[in-house]
Length: 158
Image (cartoon, rainbow, N blue to C red; front, top):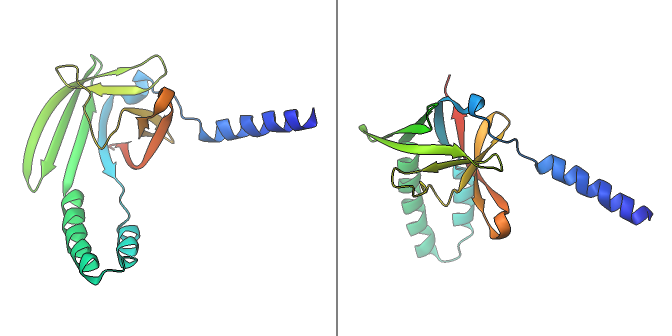
């Protein structure tokens, strides 16, 4: 019986630690900035572990180029009350604006869909959930289990 109680307590604590907040419309409306929080040092460390010098050299040049591109991308979301979202993308000084639709599903998850009701796909992101005042990206696995994409989130513009 003590083991069962201890197990229940551990489960309760672990669930509350990993719990996300449901997205509410009043907290969502407004302008948000997409953040791609990629750790350059982690990538460089992984490349250095490569044994083949040619592969390591190639990976260094490609990763540096790719990271420079990612850092130059600016994506902003403007969530509107009518379920529309304005998405503005700026890359190398070129600006493009797209419109999509958003809704909050019965589980309190933010879903963004294109005008033809296809989900907007950003690096396998299915939904966003509120966590620490930011909209964190999640991928849905089997049976609806959420896996956080820790390096991708939306933060409110000030």
